[in-house]
Length: 362
Image 1 (tube, one colour):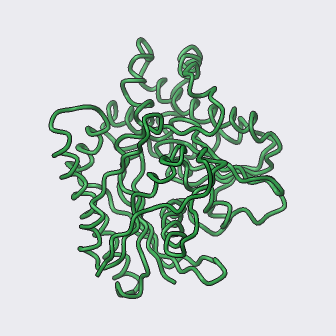
Image 2: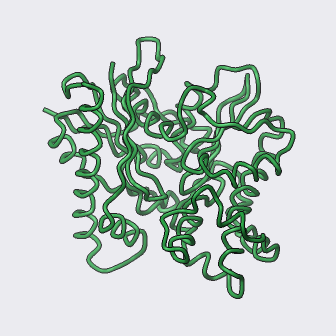
């Protein structure tokens, strides 16, 4: 069966779409990938909706329509590029754009007009993939560990998969043990935001700006003093906590380039500490997400974790920029097969749950 997965993450850089085939045994084959950036006006509005503001209900509804149009553009490009027709795709798994993540208050809000996406593409849409886990007492995140286990977990070594998106999150894969995972802390959300403010560039290409600065030890200590870092799993986070206001409250008097260097060190150190606390026997760390293309961050992990093999999911057969899209295609497949999509060990839910809501394409 053929599925499409659509992901737009905390980094707000745009939409990744992945077309996959899944056979009866669950084996996955990648058929296509497409990335399209958000138009600036939509990106700015989505970022603004992460914070309280006026007329939020109307603005959120309009933004959800904008997300649906952006997603539909990616779907149509995938179909065209792969020579696939809509009727040959069983379903699209669509994440939506998270604007508030508050499992402590009983919700996680992703903006997407699922009905409009189904109307625009003629393909069944499976979306709202976090709510059922939250309703069952879970964090609603991370949802990728089940996919990571299915695709990367068939090995004798103890390994971890690290997604470096706006937020960093780990999946821990140990033979004979339950798969688990959790959010470590900020990654590209703060790195990109600081770079956009000071260089007027969307991101720090290859981490060169961070590499040119010096880690400010007192600032790094102040950032790591955030209580979230010491919480035990299950735990998840987002821009509700790790936003530019959180950073601004701590950086007074530090040169901009040194803040960038320190934010890179924060990403590396928070992940390394979590591995040392929760998976000290990890032999290999495989990185995916946009941060996997940041050479400065990758060098940082190699230096901080010298006994651990550091690589990317490219080595495991899934390119770093396709892992999350493929994960949501896989979650759509789980929904269609009426199989649970969450791992309670990772999210803290009361048990396995069928995740998602369906909008028929016809």
